[in-house]
Structures are given as structure tokens and as C-alpha cells.
Image (cartoon, rainbow, N blue to C red; front, side, top):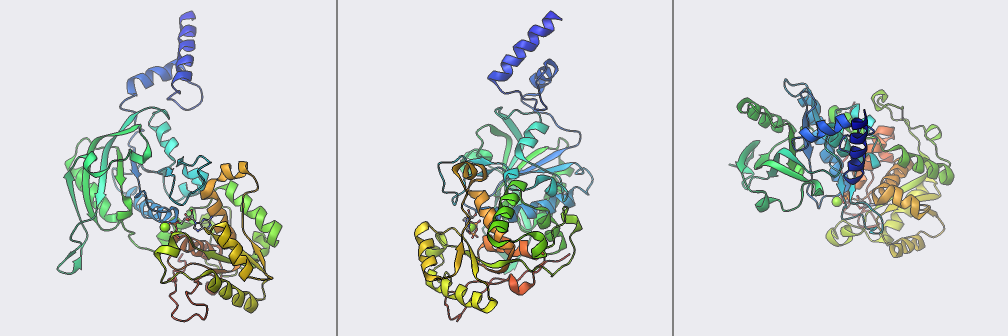
Length: 442
Ligand SMILES: Nc1nc2c(ncn2[C@@H]2O[C@H](COP(=O)(O)OP(=O)(O)O)[C@@H](O)[C@H]2O)c(=O)[nH]1
Ligand SMILES: [Mg+2]
């Protein structure tokens, strides 16, 4: 008895020194021995296979959301196949993204639940936030571990053969250092057992073919796999009912929704009930619906920063944008305008001065504490939620940020002409390039 007590005390002090690797509450002596034995290999839930993925570091938040859908649809289909029933998709923590400029707050390795409602996503398919994955395989937050197989996805040099784009893949051994110099998932603690280069051209279902082929050849099946540069994997079908199911399951975290709701109520007297939007508690209860009215304000998503320099041909000036907003609010008899933008303070003041007597709104966190809590990514999502509930929306040409707002408004049930609008380069609307219209499908 005394021996046990001493051992427990020793373990508890070890736990303080090196965080307890068993994560369901306290660390007891049994946990210690299990961990001791399995530390390096980590443990596997019966039959489980874990798919980890990452996206090219320069890609923005809203393309990352799209890549998630490709893989979620893939995983859901895969789980119906023998041997893969317990496959799980591990959500890659967000690294500090290029557009997250506030360097006075911690936002270097952000879990998905910071932004999304993970239980809602689980109603589509089996996903794990990164810390949940570590817990499941019995690895502590600060413990080193190895993934069984890391694939560096690469494009083929010759995409077309005789002018035809065909699906294909080719796996080759390669050395990590020659192809991928950063730590995996920006995490110094992750190493690999096998690293190979996988040239890949095709959609998510091609990945399934690849895995099945491997499974046939391989007796000791790797059960933790990481796919780097997963943006190379294309959608099986973009915009079909399956796409929309995965998309609808991606509801935002309650914290962000609550802040956006409060802002809507306070400034626009807008609630889900008065706006007549469709938002059942569970996305699986949503139905085809076009009756949403929205809050009595117009939302403009105005992409600046890199778009002003890199997309000069299609990006309008602030004056042109102001004139287009002015014409629209007159037409719709709306007096309030919400601006969602990555513009700087100077640009915002300029824009306001062009908009004259209109009432202009922009979301800003109410305190430093709130900013540190929701981070730059959360502010962007709150902007998106507010825009999703506006009576009328106008977005930026070829911005994935705008596209995600279109989708959200489609889910909430707005008429198409209140949503699929794009700012033109010229305020006389001449030679205007418009975003594609992808209506919701059930
Ligand atoms: N808060 C806020 N941030 C924005 C807005 N527009 C762009 N951003 C930031 O800039 C990033 C744009 O990158 P991305 O998500 O790739 O969208 P895209 O570049 O417009 O296709 C967003 O993820 C945000 O961090 C906006 O209206 N509000
Ligand atoms: Mg981008």
C-alpha cells in the first residue's frame, strides 16, 4: 500500500515535469506503465486508421475550408469500404496564416474547434481535432511521435497526355529534406517512419484507388498517414448534394455565432426569426428553402490587400465601390451598410467619406481580451456571419472569402439575386466580370 502511494507520488511529480500522456483526467500508475510500454509506438484503437493532411502553407483560410470538404467527402465514402470502416480524418491545426496580421496575439497552431462546431461536422463524418487525435493514440501534447507514412503529394509535370487530362498516380521513394523542409503540421514533435513522393492527378476517389492498391500489397497496413499538399486532390463533384452536406455540417463555433448574433441584434435589430432564415439546430434538418429576408442592411465584402496589387484588372477602386453601394442602397431603400473588409484604417476612412450620409458599420472586437479570444480568424468569420444575414450582399470577384458567404446564404435560404452579386471594376458596370453562381442542391 505504502509502495503504491510512493509510486503515485512519484508519477504525479513526473506528470508535472512532463505532462501526463494519458489524457482522460488524472494520471495513475496503470497509465504510467501503459504509456511506458507504448510511448514510442503509440496505441491504436481497434481497426482505426487515421488520415492526416496538410495544405500548402501559402493558402488562405477559405481555400483550406474547401480542401476539407474534398477530404471529408472522400472519408465518408471510404468508411463504407471493407477495412476502412474505422478511418478517421484528423483536422490540421491552422498555422499562423499570412493574413492573420495581429502579431501581439497567439495564433500559431489553432485547433478547428476555435472556429467550427466539431460535433456538427461529426454528423457528416468521423473527424478529430488534433489534440483529440493525440489523446486517442495515447501521445501527450509535448511528446514526440512518429507517423507511419507521410506522402508528399506532387503534380505531374505532364498534366495532359495527347491533349487529354487523365487521372493518374505514381508513388516513388524520396527523401524528406529534398522535398519538405518544415516540421510536419508545424509541429517539431512529429517525425515519420516512411516518407514517399506521390505524384497525383485526380479527385478524392482516385486516392481511394491508390489506398486499395496499397492495401492489397501491404500486410502491415500503416495506420497513421499524412498527406502533404492536399490541395492537389480535387473534388469528386463540386456542388452536388454530397458537397453541400459536408458544407452544411461546417457550422461555426458557438462563441463566434453568439458574438455575431449580438452585433446583429444591437445594430440592425436582426435575429434569425425576424430575418426568416432557415437554421434548425441540426443541419440534417435543413430543406430546400428560398424565403429568407435578412436584416435590414446591405453587406459589402471588399477584398483589398493583395487583391489591390495582384488583381488590378478586376479590383475596383474604393470610389467605384462606394458608387456601386450608393446605387444599390437607393434602389433597395436601405440606409445601413455593413463593411466586411481586410482594408486598413486609412482605406476604411476613405471609403466612409465617399459613402456620405449612409450609416456605415464595421465589426471590431470590443476589447483586447475579446480579440485574443477570437483571433484574426474569428473576426473574419464574424464578418462572414454578419454578411450572411444581410438583406443584400455584394462580394469581390474571385475571392474564396466571398464564395464562402455565398454558400452560407444559400444554406440560410436567400433568393439568389440577393446573394450572387459581385462588385464590378467600373462603377458604370461596363465590362463587368462576375463570380459564378453555384446554387445549393439537396
Ligand atoms: N476580417 C476580415 N478579414 C478578411 C476579409 N477579407 C479577407 N480577409 C482576410 O484575408 C484572408 C483572405 O484569404 P482567403 O481566405 O484565402 O480568401 P481570398 O484570398 O479572398 O480568396 C481571410 O482569410 C481573412 O484572414 C474581411 O472581409 N474581413
Ligand atoms: Mg487567398
